Image (cartoon, rainbow, N blue to C red; front, side, top):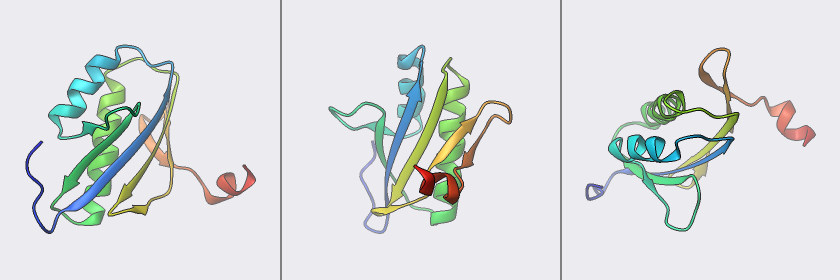
Length: 110
């Protein structure tokens, strides 16, 4: 991974994926997109961004969508932090092929 610029946003992504097939293929793709797996943590990735928070959020959702579309899996959830600020969790909707934000009411019921 490149050296982090001084004004860059720290990115931490946690992917909860069930029934994953061909994990190595997904890992290689994410690495090419500058997401480094956190040592000792399964499906936890770090990176940094020099763009805006909105652009970074869109990039994360797009890259992880592409990564999942390359492999077989049962279900997937994603949560990320930008500069240690947590963003709402997402689930991967296999019907639409996109990550969808988990509604607040669903989170509160758990």
